[in-house]
Length: 549
Image (cartoon, rainbow, N blue to C red; front, side):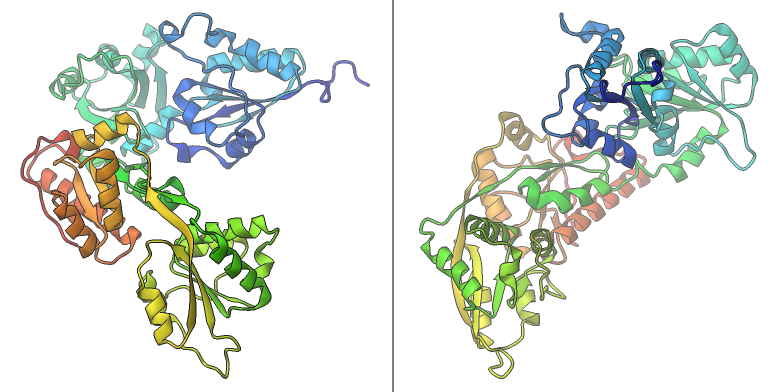
């Protein structure tokens, strides 16, 4: 055996991982894989929340490294001690992920940590990430090169010397400057001193690639006045990092056409979704695609039925061949049946020979996750009425059994039962679960609801209106109210709310789309009037547009 070769069995391994500039969607597939298998996660605080969601629940996080030593509590290791923690965990045979902001290849501290691993023969790998100096301009709508192939120079203002400033100032290269908000004007002055003209276009972006992103367009000579006029300087937040791009490609006229991220219809909007995280998953994803920040607040809680015997008899009837069909009207109904199956030691095979119907796409997905592919999903409206439109009438020649099992909530309407009976079917209408009002959300959320901290709220039923007002209070007047249909809107108005957006169809995704259309129209109106684009929560109460899509 080679005595200098790494001892793979005795030591762990380290993955130096770039988490990108802030947008969780910019993590690479390899990064997600590495995080999923990590025993120890050591992450910069700026990206800890970005990476931790992909790690196992049992992962150890001994350090949340910080570049701001003044903010580190006594007794907590500083960034320079990170190498010791990485090495200690690796020596103990652990799989360590060291996650850094941007790309590890541009982090000098990480280079030292890699050398320490190499010196001890500890196996390590590098997973590149998107560097802030590249990712942030892309999100700001500022291309760094064009067809003419202009050079690009990257400058870290904290370490740049006079020679660096002079070289870049004397060139016509696009300069990408990593600095802080309160040091932007000084960096601009260095470039002018080095030979750049004061009227050279410049963009300054803070919180790049996140929904807090904000970009200002100026010139080297005017940037100080622009930031002062925007009331972002002087500020106690002046030390936050920014990416400044200097060059013709950052000109205002060009950026107006290329600013794809900040021009999303709901950019930065905090949208309240009164549903559980499981129910709201696809809806929240849709809102994120519009630039919004969804905040899920459950308004109902699901509990077992008070008398479980009826549900138990029905599940046994599935196994003994009592039913031709089972119809699921919600994700909660699927969950209730699945839990009862597990209680009896059953699985999806018990559905063999039984036709399965789902009221909509989300319920169908829950069934597929259970291992059941539904035979019937509405081709049109995703509701009980839509399901009835496609449901076949009972035919004694083709249907050996005339009975349908309908597991549902205790407060469900009779629409589906009545429709199935009219089609000739016998229905076992069984209470599979009860819905009760959820516990109040945290005090911070309640204050945001009542104080105008949310830009919009999506109401998907009359019960969500009643329950949200009951557990958290009435949304503030500046909050845009969006309702899924006339009945929900009527309930909202009865509670003193002004409805701004109405979905054209009873679909949560059409509701989100209608809110996005409202946001886009609001943005266009502000730009046409020459006003700054603001979120509803940034406005004082006043006139509000009423839109019905």
